[in-house]
Length: 479
Image (cartoon, rainbow, N blue to C red; front, side, top):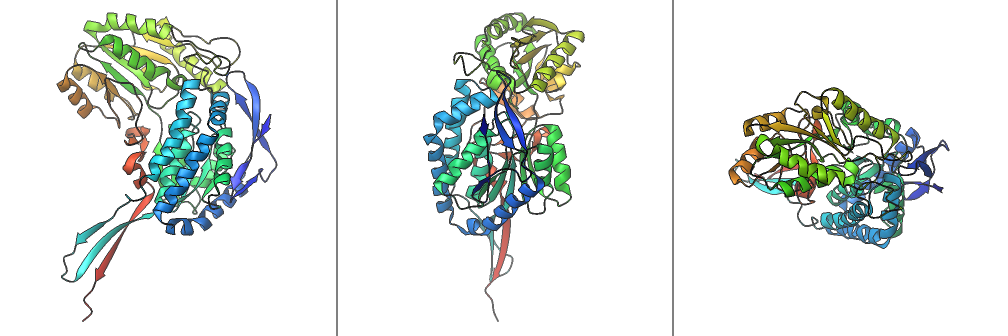
């Protein structure tokens, strides 16, 4: 078993209380490491370090900050296989998904470095004859980055990459379930020699670490990826200092299959969008609306594909399509949601059960005869479950898709460009995928509406989260 370490002000350390929290492998339920159970005192040491470092870091030319980001990217690549192994062990990702996560994390740091010469301001005409108005962008300051367990490594880059290139410093709080990858990243930070205090890592319970960071006057923005409940808690804590929040929360992505769709491809794209990361992505396809004319044919194809999904221990078998859910509570939650859907009238076509008696594995599941009023259509499942709903008209499908408290991802499958563009216009979601799987690009903008969050990440608009606008009025008339 490995003892992990926090990273504060350029130093590795244990928690000030000497306490530890075990970390489990969700495939085996075995303890694989233990993390420091960080305290409020540890949080404040990290915040003080970040605040002390921010002024000098913010004054560092952006092109020099970019060079540091490239060093971090290369440091990740040097330990690529180690990071892949860690993510498979502590989060249960398949080899394919773990490899993608590690490679994209390194690439993301490189991508954010490319913005060094593209953080721009404006010169605005004044109403006065001898005055010029300058609009400039400045770093917001100290960032609290609170990470989820489903993409624990990539989210380091998504938050820290944008923050650092903008001139901010950051305190990162990894998920209690998946801390090892982040603490090893701290070793990369240390090895490249990043100025102390620019990146700090504090492990422990979210209810202690996350809330203390969010409620601190030393923080200038809290960036959180997590559940709606976590977002509500963070907003409440941040409100006392009117601290800016950037939240990516839950999703209940609808996928609309029209009668003119390529059914074979649509079924594969939807399966890919449902079982990705073992069904644990905020923009997974969570509910599928199928037009009546093709419902029977599409369902047959979909069930064949979902029934063929191979589930197992990702570390022992690299050919599996899905690994485990992340923890026992996740397995219990998915099981309960499927059982409740069946009680409410859904028909189980495949799956619907735990796989094995060790590890948190759940079979790829399809539920038919679902109706819009069922809980499975409205509550985020966060597991490999596809409920099917039949629709008659496009108006009906759009209305049902929008009948949801979430608004992150969505998709439509059709060969008609008018249908595709209309659906994209009328769906109330931050992202719409047309004839492809659900998976965003780093140069886009990943953001939701409704209870899916506030603000967003990726691309040039993601960097704006970590910048503030300053306006200077320069009057050169001295008489």
